[in-house]
Length: 322
Figure (tube, rainbow, N blue to C red):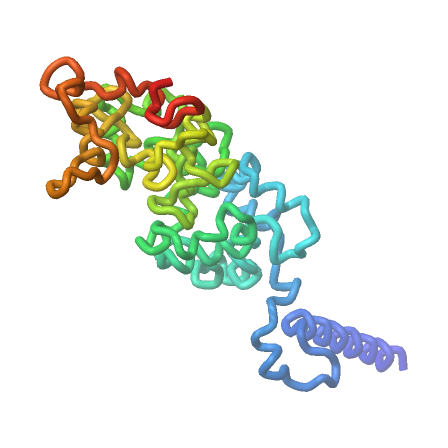
């Protein structure tokens, strides 16, 4: 009789273990619930499919140590988004199948060998909600198949302090593609990028903008140049119209020039005369032109700004004398 009872208990124990194993392998199934519906196939992965960053660390210890020093690490401490938004699996997806497969890379999302748009879309799941990156999908970088990981390195950032997880510090990062800009910043008169006083994204929004060249707005929703050159912004009683209508680049090269003040022409009068010229018929002017013997352009008065000193705008003189 005792042998029968012992055998019964053994059978019952094995049956219970089998039931628990079955539930573990199929966490979405409840007893008597039947097969999953088609809508369940599209549902987000169940929490049981996430193993946590501590499991990732057992194989990827070196990467994990780098991860601990980055801003992404704080996601481990934020439980509001659940397992799908925490740690390594927040970017790489659920890792249970990857672990069960002995590190099978096909069982988890990896960023190597994936097209740029897929990578960017994955990053934008978290980073696409803030205003700075809201325009990335219409940006020049996106349209040129530049992925987030071409500029950012989540595991091995090279920028100082890991800021923005940049793969290289600016401006070297930007020069990797925009090589022609390096030579412009090496000209005699230039914005001081090479000296470290500015970086490229002080003027450009690399994640997209509604302005040409991905330029940023100033705090007053005006040209980004006025963020530093506030004395040129105005408003003035007498505005020099091109400053407001054409912008600073109508007269200046923005990155660097061989001419003082980064002007587009070596002689100031040549630059001014591109707009201040006479109509050939009738003697009327397209805009007031420097004419008459007092404006001998070939000799002494070749620099218009010798007299018109407040060329960006004036509060006292309609011809920008003061």
